[in-house]
Image (cartoon, rainbow, N blue to C red; front, top):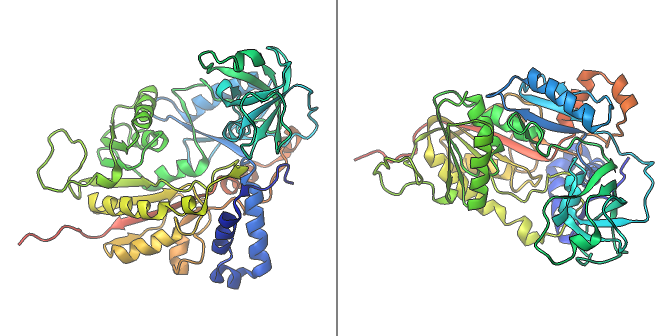
Length: 474
């Protein structure tokens, strides 16, 4: 049962999504009532976290079993002796799954309150503590050591530094304040550490702040699936065209046993720095990260650059991952999105530019994987239909592992083509109530099945380039 309201969207955006999820093909196949029910379930589920926290083991440095043992000890400490299982995914050997306990409905709300921004609130629902920059307002009497009820300002209406707030707010749980109200809003150089340590969250998930940092990478399940679908091999030259923060880049390098070359591009320098930091932390040396616009990554002339820096020669990569910039409408939890329809629909042209560059940079026989963390038809299945028409050299490929659902109808793709896509659809299972007792009785296969289905919204397509796109020399 939902404990939060459905995701709050602008009317124009909700109508746009509804048109996509209730297109003629879907309504014809499911019936109008079932299509509408699925859409409403989607909106409700988006505002709640997935049922499992997913971590990827850095297989370059340690085995999954070793990390599982270390993590079990860590969770035992974090959860005050509460026994929560850690499952190794049967199809993704480097992925560990931790059930999320919740929603916990008997938490007593306190008089002392803190309001946090929506993004901070989303992080709390996935196991984070509240950091000082995320605190928007606090009760006037809040002192360090106080037990505080934490609320999310999902509409972004609370004024910074307010002493009380009566607008739309969603209860996230209780915690202990590490700092006073006065310290938070004193106007002195901004504090950056933990402001409130969550002790009774509505959803209990582990905190991974400085936990086994060289061994683990916190990642949504479909994000780990993508790299396995790409299937990088030792000795290959691989391009991650939109790489930040480096989760998939480092996964590529680990699956290659750090042998070969992984080029990571992102056009924002701070994000490139993050990719480099993650590569260093995880002990991976095959990654070279550059601050560069992926749409300009194709070299205009045929003069080889001795340094191997961007832009690159055509047909110079064995495999390319295009985890494209997107509207991010599949992220969970997300209680409110204030974007306009223009913003939500602005990504398709950029994705096509990047895709065109990727096709030209890929060797004949090479593999291109396209992915997004959004749910729109325009950024997913429609892009596949466009790509297959625009690039006759591409063939859609079956994916391994295939743990998501098939693609969504409405873009004119055949049934066989939809079967080759992976769409992770948050509407396919009802929201779960998970407590320690139900976990004790649950079968492992059922929990894995739930983890596969109850994830963020995500999309994956895999192509192979059957022939060269180079003009034959005269």
